[in-house]
Amino acid sequence: MRTFYLFIFLFIAQLNFAQDFSQISLRNIKNYGYAVGNLNQDSFPDIFMFDYQGNNQIDAALLMHTGEDTIAYNYIKIEEDFKAVGEPAIGDFDMDGDNDILYTIQGTYYLFQFTNDGNGTFTKDSLGITTSEILEAMDVDNDGDLDVACYSTNRNSVHFLLNQGDGSFVKKLVFFTSDPLDDVAFGDLDGDLDIDVAMVFNQNSGTNFSYLINNGPTFEETVLMADKFSGPSLVKMGDLNFDGNTDLIINNGRSAYGQINDGNLNFTEKYIAQSQGSPVDLRSIEIADVTGDGVVDLFLGSNSDGVFFIRNLSAADLSYSRTKISNISPSFEIRHADLDNDGDNDLIIDNGDFWILENNIEQIPLGLHDLEVKVLDIFPNPVTAYIQIKDQQLLNSAYFIFNSDGRLCKEGILDSNSIETSNLEAGHYILLLKSKKENEFYRSTFLKF
Image (cartoon, rainbow, N blue to C red):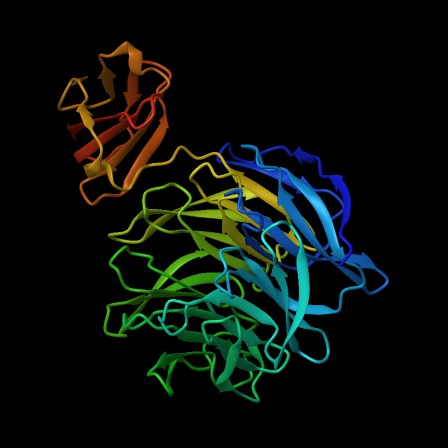
């Protein structure tokens, strides 16, 4: 197969709305579907994509990371006039030590694979089965090999492709409906280590939101909401409150809600945030921990008002802050990946054009109990208006103030030897400093009057 090495992309950082993220534009890319994964064993994630060329032509292309500590890629075309549809998946499906690419052919829905030989060459193979067009690589049946969970909004169906251990698949129909299927999410809702399914249907279907529990050979459907929302909806899965249970995140065209799982499939609704535009302005949702504290945050993309960072301030009471981080509109889809191998999650935003928001947030390590945390010397204590830091060598450290519930109340950079506390409510607090030295932390408690 011929491989076309075209050029190295140059990335242009745009004006930031907040210092938390730097906006990067990938020039000349028109995305029609993509997947992220390491394709050349250099430890940096690469991107395989359906690159729209105009006049109904789509090329299969690779964005191969340059291997440096910046977000930059070599563009490699691997097939012209490529007849694919949906979203591809990347994974080591044949268990030979390198990642391959699965995708679905437009019209026929046959499953094909670009098989990776480990040296940058890909061979196109038909796998001999038809399937849904939106593919996600995961171990569906917990048997140690990589399967595919997939669904179709064109044909309103959900399938599992079960890997037989050699890279061949057996198709299993999970769900089919005559109702228009808006979105599907996969994850373990009942804690039994296999993959369950959450689904959102069109507003006229009679069922807006349901989930399927995987009981092995069969699936049990439970309707969680019926005829509640209007307009197309989205669904995501993640542990919002850090209790070890998988929760659900849904939207109703404008607002995002959590369905909090108590571990026994009893769900409690929790309002999270909404977009600022029209009543049906919310277009995309992503969940990811972008601060390093182990608690997932949310990102909302809109049709007309940009992208918002919904930061999870407390897993205890699920309170959030809201910051606009980009003007990219419409935001068809938001995903996350550590694109520069710096230990934090960056964002990929698709609106026909292809954008990256590089994460600049000072990470808060989750496992502080596993690190050496030094005692921080502060005064006065109790405090009213300001905390004074005695050690001048800690200037320019990142600081974080948490209340007794673990909620982040204030953060910043220590640009003087004092931190203002007048806007904090009365109570007990924890002050954490992350110095400029790697893995060096300081901690103190204080009482605010």
